[in-house]
Amino acid sequence: MNEADARPVPTGAPGVYCYPESFERLVADLRTGIAALAADEPFGRLAVPPVIARRTLEQAGYIASFPQLLGTVHSYAGTPKEWAALAPLAGEGGPWHQRQEITDLVLLPAACYPVYASLAGRELAEPVRYAVEAGCFRQERTTETGRLRSFRMAELVTAGTEEHCLDWRERWLDRMADWLTGCSLKPAVEVADDPFFGAGAKLYQAAQRRQQLKYELRVELEDGLVQAVASANVHKDHFGEAFGFTAAGATGQTACAAFGLERIALALLHAHGPDPRQWPAAVRDAITGGRPR
Image 1: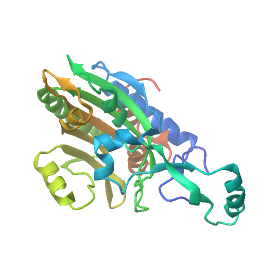
Image 2: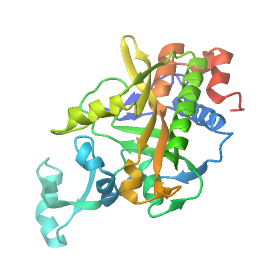
Image 3: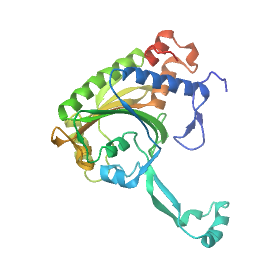
Image 4: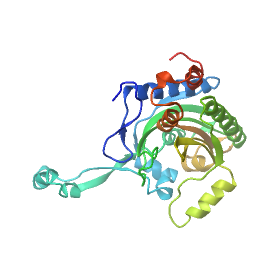
């Protein structure tokens, strides 16, 4: 492969890729650009691991709503003697995993969940803001380009009153659309819903759309394929109820702006070509917000 070619490298597992150095430089530029967008707000920064307590996602309602996307962490639960009987099966493709049991951890499906858990029991005297990034996992059921199972998500998260969260989301929706437009990606802003699972899915999705809780910014990743690369969301008091935090004497509310780093990078590669060094200088400056690389 040409060293300047930033296109991802398949691993043989659907939705899982290796990324060459040129792709990683592009992701680093996207981080710089997001930081530039957020420079006028006091975001605290949290380093988020790729796993989260299973109990946290149960409490947040994720498992009840999206069990089809969840990746669980299992571990061997037997004795060394019992493993002696199973070990030969590992090389034969047999059921060596029959003694694996679910642990207290699951794979992180979105970067923002640890933030909500960290607010548990607090009274927020003023809005809080956090910037996070994490390696995330979702068990996608398709091999469509950009529909990754292992991916990186950068998020800006805030919590406070209803008025604060609504105003903040509107401001960030405009800011994200302007940034992507400056990168020549022509985003379409659409009211959206999440892939709720189970008997109540249609009701949840209809309510989410009716209340305009989720907006997606959708761009083309390859000819004829348009996907969401970012979203701006309000959750009302869902996480305040789940984790017991308050603001101005009422249940706390939350909002977030989420950026799919690989998807934005794929959209840029589709729009401008596989060698970022050859892109127009105006595009490269727009990506980083004019900050040095």
